[in-house]
Length: 196
Image (cartoon, rainbow, N blue to C red; front, side, top):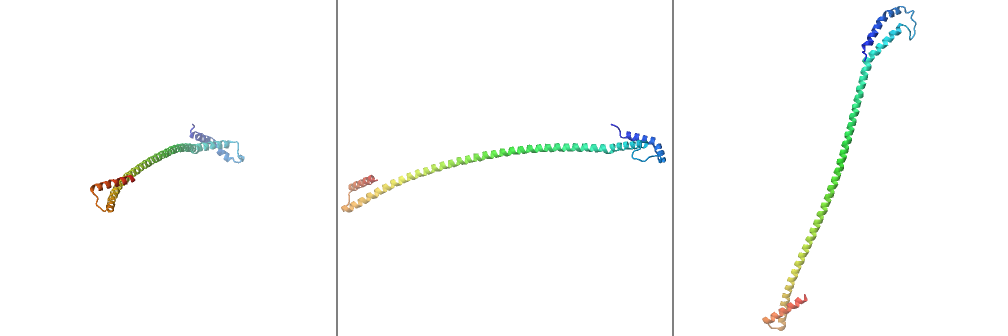
């Protein structure tokens, strides 16, 4: 890379070399023809001045500007890279969240199915216990009714026997002996037992 001071030094040297002639040319301004471009030593001075201007602009404007632009481009590339990484991380997080959501839904469905199954089993168990309890109570009631019927029949037989004895005594008008009494009771029991 060239140094910036080399063109400047060359320009100063040419300026010093051409300065006496420029001064002489200004004294002889009458000889100088007006125009935009004159092919004399002033063109050389203008060229040297232009090169000095380019060197100064290159050193103090173009070089810092290109450095700034390169840093800015690097910063933008870095920001884009970070944004892409953040997008990928967000996408991965979203996928993980979606997977966890699906897993949670499956787990809740499994829990719900298990609870429904347990409720159904409990309902069946309670129904079975209720039926067994009803059957047991029904059987107990039947046994009790049968016992009550037997007691009622026995009481009815005794009542029928005593009523029969009382009626027989009234009809006969006499007192029955112990043997008559036993015979009548047994006959009444046979009659009531046969009727039932």
